[in-house]
Image (cartoon, rainbow, N blue to C red):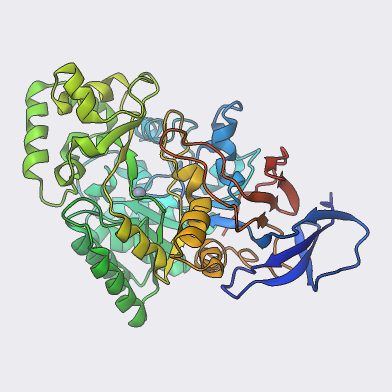
Length: 527
Ligand SMILES: [Zn+2]
């Protein structure tokens, strides 16, 4: 079946390479860009109007947690459509060490438990092929990384120990298989159990497998707060030792002890690039982060998995030890609350406690006359650990510096869940175009678009995407640079953006005049 032909007429084309805009018409046929013509093309067929607007490649969101969106309830339309409505046509999931594959028979329970707590929906799959085969009805294309935490769970369960030589070999073989099948690379989340239990020997061995495929090692650093410089060195050392291409996820220097440290970390990354290393980073345009509530607790609490965690935190003495560790710190642990305070943490999603969503932990504790650690442990138990938080931990200047770095690209880090998720899932791309490009001029428009299109497509090996050129895939966005802006905020986190006129996915119009058309042309990308 051939997709229809149409002409995107009258726009200014920003081709995604970073080159300046030029007036041109884009001919779309059979899912591909057939030609890019001078304005005034003679055309009798269907026209998609781009008069007064900018035409760009579809945006690539390099960092999402949208792995399980295919299993979200049909009525969760705002959740499902949030990335498409802001112009995203490709998402890269499987980040921060968590993917829905590979799972093994012997640790099936641990895998299922983790998937439930991490993604809300869906199940664990044996490998990339099984995960890919289960995708249907997607609005956007999807590429997937292998999550190191998931991979580790398949072989070791949730154990807080080193793998044996045989276990490490098995992890390498499973990873190799998934990469061969088309997974985009390997991700790690070194603040999260069980990923945080890994030492450098394990990570270097796995990164070596990724290097042989020429794919990316994408890492949520072991510390993005007071220990961020050491954590960055660990990642650079690993890249040097294994020869892997390195992507630092959602780069930030958060917490009062690390504010301003991007003045050190960004030049460090540039120095590595100048020395010939293949390194880059991504960033989302907000000064607040979001993660799991259980990540506020020291890592020993999670040894053995979620069941063990829930049993442990019902004990009073354990809670006392948690309080002590948050105050005194634990070597090698990021300790978000110790770097900030419970007044900077608010509950994002807790399905059984809608009244707590959007509220600060210190306020809930004060209202109940309780200690914040008790409030947190009680909530984790009641929700079977499936609680996410917003952490107001960054400074605006740091966010701007990372956005402006020539080697940064845009990744929402979006977590599509019910409740009050971080607005970055529905707002990141239009916020960069509005607030950080038009309104405050941190970026110029061709550069901002490049960070959303040509740059990430080249980095992740998305062949035929990210640049408007004849023969490439017809993933396109038409937007109005004067009015484009994010609508989502912390009170209304899924509110749609303004200024996005049309979005084309695989040669089909999926958003027309700002409204989704119902077209679901998204495909799984095998890389
Ligand atoms: Zn992360």
